[in-house]
Length: 300
Ligand code: GLU
Image 1 (cartoon, rainbow, N blue to C red):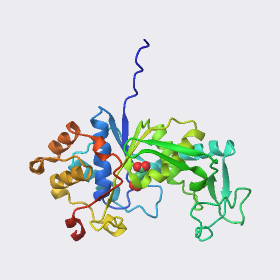
Image 2: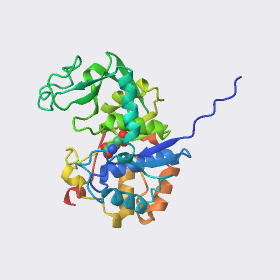
Image 3: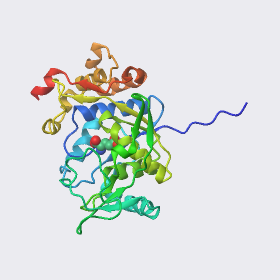
Image 4: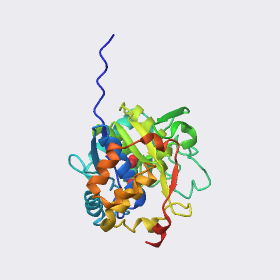
């Protein structure tokens, strides 16, 4: 019998975009990733995804961090800001380019409006002069994602299309930055909202091209409005109420299907989070893609 392989220590992360205060959907993602990491003795990192300067709202990174602290979601290590890490993305892009896997694309969003994916228009060279985005050429293969919660999912990369890795305005794209950061930060487990499930095959393809390890994935349900509609951007700017941290943590636990006892609401945020860790049963989320916020959330 061989010696059992030592499993790598769990490293999880929460990666909010500082485009507003923490909202219910992001609280659920933060809590789910925190509980999954801590219940396995793992580290939990926080990374600010602030590359898109036009969408960043001044002060919101600080407000998100204060809210996490008030909700007893304490992180390990330093907070990384993607805006300070562009040298890493540039290096990865150079690497991809040296491998011959990228190409410049002059298509505007309008050019591509009618297509669901990217039809490969500029694969053999940009169609127009002027600023270009950089795309990663995907292969004609299926990528299987073994999601811990959503089960096995298969995606045809060609249907997803060649993914933008650097935008026309020079900003590195989320898909590239997230892959580089998760690898350089040693993230073993990505636990995030199911709205990003569709992005996962691109991220796996980029990891493979860059010879990074693929982390385990667990996609948590997306929180919708009480009526079932997507959580509106305008509502996202309405932060959750830190004065009601205990009640809101319990609501997030309910949305994560964890069945907390009613009296848990009377406890401190730290005690609630501790209950969550001790009782974390991710299997209760199996195949749950969407959960509805309680009615009172509309009136905020
Ligand atoms: N920054 C992304 C968001 O706020 C999350 C990225 C991720 O978890 O991979 O939606």
